[in-house]
Amino acid sequence: MGPLTGTRVVEVAGIGPGPFCAMALADLGADVIRVDRPSRHGPGNPDTPPADLLNRGRRSVAVDLKDPAGVEVVLELVASADALIEGFRPGVMERLGLGPDVCLERNPRLVFGRMTGWGQDGPYASMAGHDINYIALSGVLAHLGRAGEAPTPPINLVGDFGGGGMLLALGICAALVEAGRSGEGQVVDAAMTDGSALLMTMMHSFRAMGIWDDERGTNMLDTGAHFYDTYECADGRYVSIGSIEPQFYAELLRLTGLEGEDLPWQQDRTHWPELKARLAEVFRGRTRDEWCEVMEGTDVCFAPVLTMEEAAQHPHNVARGTFTEVAGITQPAPAPRFSRTPGEILRPPPHAGQHSDEVLAEIGCDEARRAALREAGTIS
Image 1 (tube, rainbow, N blue to C red):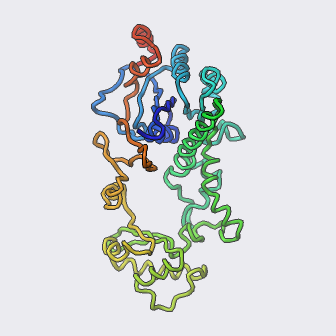
Image 2: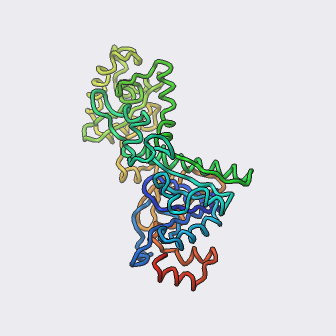
């Protein structure tokens, strides 16, 4: 029973950050109802759930939002909900008849969560885009990558998930707390440009202090420093080193056998390239597993660079239960941890419309009405 048990969220189906937000809330106990598009063939076999893990933990109803009768069904769901999540371009929900004004009139306590790339307003608001574009505009992408090379997108972790879905989840939780005090709902405008910019706050601080250069790959945390980087080993695998503090750097030199060499000062940036080349030479002398034997359990600030498959099998992650298996698929477990109300994956990803009858019955939609809606193609 997670900390959000008793909270109901309506999720209007989308892609990427919206589903991630809904997944996080469901992992923490929220009853998330996903509104999917109807299928001519009806729900699939519940014994073989889809593999889209971002949709785990919730129930699905399939509703045609272009049908006024379908819009009314969603508004009835909204009336019993605490929050709503949508990820369309600005104005789409309003054109469907499901904008914030309509939904808040039906349920004044509703938290209306909006997930976009550019935000609800501004010159770019109506443009199409993806994670790479949002983190480019927010000043993140320019600083990711090695010196002399093109910027490197970090998959879609920074815009879609860190600065997008996760920030929307935080916003919804905060607004739910406030609604519990005031009795009033509100709109949460979560934009991936805003969120990814927020994630760069520490780098803005460093820049203001004069210790961060706009040239990527030349700074302490962006692969510029020899003591904060990844190194290839004899077997072609990699290890990560983060020996920033002097005592940790001293341990790095000791365990690599470099402490007896006459080396430049750790923080002398003019010598970082040559020191990096020296460390690279040393790390290529042993396999990744051999370096694990040397450095695990020390204060070097070390970890092997693992693939997804390897991470799920690593002893530390196994001990922590960082990964779990649901319906035959290994996947990250809910996070963070709660001492009294732990989160859990309530169910595998649903097929579209798998729970239409169950959910609609809960809001008073009787069997005869459901049959009529299904016959008309409004639900499936």
